[in-house]
Image (cartoon, rainbow, N blue to C red; front, side, top):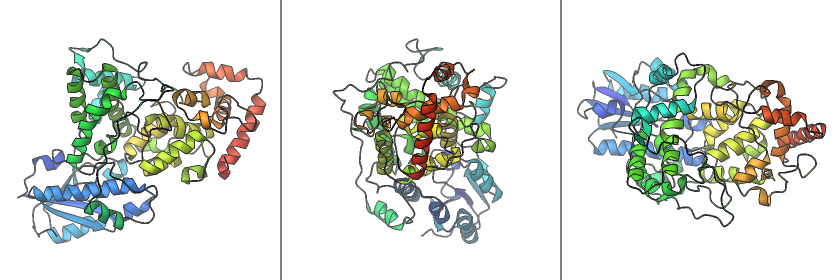
Length: 501
Ligand code: SF4
């Protein structure tokens, strides 16, 4: 119970800002400021969040509140019906002279909190400001990740030798797209913390509307646990990361991925800490350049790029639907079983851990939604709810833009559409599947392969002048069985809608 301290500044800390070194917390004095944290029951019950996601956020917030109290702050931790009610109850009791906060990380969050009279300060959880991003691309026809990434490398100085990359190469994508050898690879196991009393009390109090498996201690809920994960990621995982970063397998849900995104997205880690650690590991000779560059690209490249793109595109981006996709999310996304081994493996991983790496997200879940014409917001909301690292700012560019081409090519220069051949090349999923990835018509036809050719044929006019996909469009025109493919695609889509695929 917070002791009453009136007429002081209140700092409102949100659930994804759990870092004492950032924003108003970094310069505040426990003698002058009160901390407000609000756990909103309305927010927790509004969507079918993954249980591990809800547990991660609530437990991390409560642990952070305790940490701030240990550091001398008065913390008013409100468990309230809504954010508005939590702020109202706080103001009634504490009568603050003003309420300040680091800016929330969504358009609607910023608008809402500002409308409550809260003074907003810049978000310091990223390395790049939106103003810098917009200046970089001012007057340019299009924004590209590679331009942004090289600018980041030069500006921030990671893996650089003066103005040039340390090895003379910017990109190791070729080395980093290997499929797994048949003999398999042993990947380092993730750290798992034992659940404590706080974890258990949070789990007892979470709403019944949640989905997904119970947490087992995979995701760090404190700064110290996040720092332990960072050390493990750099020392044990990163050396193996690069070559198989795009591979998928039924034998390991994590492969050599660092699993740091939830901690980064809650503020428990700062991207500069990860980038600094990559630099040190590479310079010491502990990590090959392809792995170091691959992770650095994710941290200072992709992650910062989607953050800036989200803000620079504005709220209309959230309604993007360039391909007029209107199909509701099929039942297999809600737990109906499926014979597609790729989908069933990836969906089982999401159920079990609230996480899969970027390729199952993009080339299995997103790819099926793209090919089937699933309504973009439906997939975006599903991913936001089901992934422990989900947030609107990350899901909008990645799902609407990258996976579904709903933004018409702002985020990606081509639709990431692929048939069964790609999935077979990058995984072992097809080996034990009912379907045959090489067949596009008939009962054994791989749904991805059938829908791929149907998708290309459906959008011929739109894509035949796009040099990155024109070859596939031309090939689709030469298919002698295109009518049969289209008939099979209708059957596949009907079964998908009925939950019978
Ligand atoms: Fe997926 Fe098709 Fe491969 Fe089956 S054959 S695992 S449906 S890509």
